[in-house]
Structures are given as structure tokens and as C-alpha cells.
Length: 356
Image (cartoon, rainbow, N blue to C red; front, side):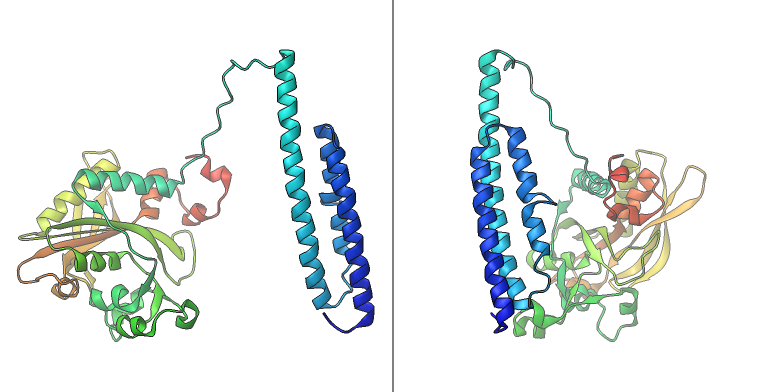
């Protein structure tokens, strides 16, 4: 406590006032014989304009140290009073129920009021639906950490630190000291970051499993970029990986077309592959999906897994081949539910969420 005599005197007088308020409130709560009186007691002492709130405002001129100590003491008193209040409230409610039952005013045989069931978030719904479709085709679900190392997020995916492709992923790098990670791990696996895609899950899975491999990796990812109607700093992806002997582009095309037909509930949907570039696949391509009006929309990226990536995952690249693909769950949700702004998913506006 500071040595300012004025502040010390004020502190002790105010602390005494709070003890008096506490004693009054305890007596009033104990005296309460019905819920209405109890509620009035709550408002008088613990409400927004109650005695404790008023007392809070009265020590604004105290020194910072006295404010802190007095604030801790007040919060302790407030918490203690709230616990006693809620206990008393439960007791009075139990008494009221017993009285009503004894007087025959409550029919205990009547069915209870069914609680309202909450809504699943639209991205959760899309994620679960996509998972079920891929599981029906024999894929397993694999998970990985959102805080990743440079090795798994970039190096193992054929994106070394000098590679220009790193510019494609605007990365949130983390301060190593704040995370208290072991120096050995940082030294061997690189700096820490928020994963920019769920592809690291594929490397982690390959390290522990030998082919045949057939997994999907749904999850949240992070990109350091400006937000607008079609971009967010955080969003959800679902990626897939299939590795075995004699896997080809034809296998991928059949699987991804079946997925989109089931997801959009339209057997007439077709897909086309356009040449593209991703460091971790060769060849690489973008996947376009046909629309009813005859036009096409881009929905995913994919390719045959690069031999360097298989080697990083401890897979024999001379014996096995595979394909990998990825798409945004947010984008799938926007198309499925005709939503034109990705930011709506993260604003927690019940007017929006209650529609799903």
C-alpha cells in the first residue's frame, strides 16, 4: 500500500463501509420470505444502481494501489453475496413448488416445456455433410494442430524459405518466446505460425501411416490478408489425400465428381480440370464445376502429390503415387445457401444464424 496518509485513511473508511453494506445485505437476504422481496434486495445491493455499484464509483480519487486492493475486496464481497442470493432463490423456488403441489394448483402429470434446440452454424452443417460424403467413399478424418511449425506448413510441402510460392500464403508468424516452446523443436522444425492450410495434416499422417492412405483433413486456417466479401483472415478448409499403388488423375476425377454431385444433390453436375500450379503437386490443376446455366465455377485445387512431399512423409515415391485436393468450406456454404458475404459467418448475428 502507498504511504499517502490521506489515501490510507480513505481506504480503511471505505473498506469499513463495504463490510457494513455486506452485513446489511446478508440480513436482508436471510429475511426474504418470497421471491419478490428477494429480487428487490438484489436490486438494492447488487443491481446496476445498487449500493455496491454506487460505492464502486466513490473511490475514483484513490491512488492506483489502493484502488486495486479495494477493488479485489469489493469483488470478493460481491461474489459472496451473489452466491448466497442464488442459494436463497433456489430455496424459495423449491418452497413455492411444494406449496403449489400441495394446493393442487400444479398438475405434475402434465408434460414439461420442451427446451428450444439451438441451431448448428452453417459452416458446421456444411463441414459435417462433406465429412459424411467422403466417409461414405472410404475416407478417414485426420486432425492436426492449428499452431504449426515452418517445417510442416511449408518445407515438407516443397516450399522452402527461398521459394517464391511462399508469397501465396500470407502468414501469421508467432513469437517463439511467448509460446515457451523447446529450442530443439524450433531448431529442427522451424519457426511457429498459425497454419495457412490443412495440408500439414497430410504430412503428419503420412509419417505415421503407410499406404494405402485415404484421408480428409477439415479444419480452420489463417491468412494475413484484408477482409472483404470473399476473403477473411480465418476460414475453414477441407483437404483430401489418397496414396496407394497406381493412383492416377482418373481416380481423383471420379471421386471429386461424385462428391460434388452428392453435396449439391445433382447427378448432372460435371467437372473439368484446368492446368495450374501448386508447389506440392505435379501436375496441378483447378477444378471447375458446371452450373445449370452452362457456365462453370472454380471450387477446388488439386494435383498428383509431388515426389518430394511423399519423401517428406516417409513414403516410397518410387512405389506409390497419390493425389491431394483442397477446397474452402466457407465457399461451399456460400454457394449452397446463396450467401454473398463470407463475413456474415463470423459476426454472430442471430438474425442470420437462426435461418439455418
